[in-house]
Every structure is written in structure tokens, then in C-alpha cells.
Length: 97
Figure (cartoon, rainbow, N blue to C red):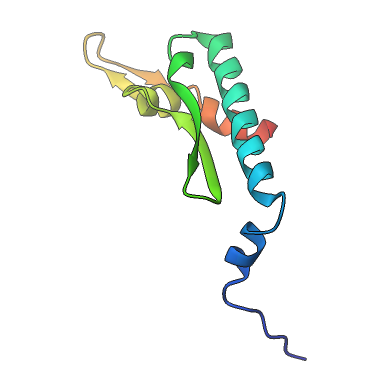
């Protein structure tokens, strides 16, 4: 048995009443959780966490601080010549959602 799926199904679903609101709500919830998770550790980057709408149907959350990648995934501290383990706070936040 074969079934035809409209190739524009993503656009159709994204345009349904309530879907965009839920997407924005989820991005805001993710930003709140990410801020809280960062605050538990250092709090220094929590102010750079935000949720933003993209276009008319999408939203995202993340960290805008330039040190976010090193903080999340780890980095090499050249002054101490040692590897600093990452916090993986972004992955933790997504798992908690």
C-alpha cells in the first residue's frame, strides 16, 4: 500500500491554529530552563540566554555569549595548560524538556 504525503506538510502543520504559539511557548520554556541550569553552575552566562521568534512560524532558544561553545563543550586553558571539561548544559536542558 502506498500513501501520498503532501510535500508541503511541514508548512501546513506549522500554519495550524495554536502550533506557532506552542512553538514559541516551548522556546521560552527552554530558555528559562537553560538560564536556571547555567545559574546552578556559574550564572555568568545566564544573561545571554534568550528565546527568539524566527519568521512567522518558528522560534529558538540559545546562548549568545561568545564563550558559550567553550563553556558547553569544554576548551583548553592555555594559561594553565590544561583541558577544561565542558558543562554540556545545553544538552542537559534539552533532555529535561
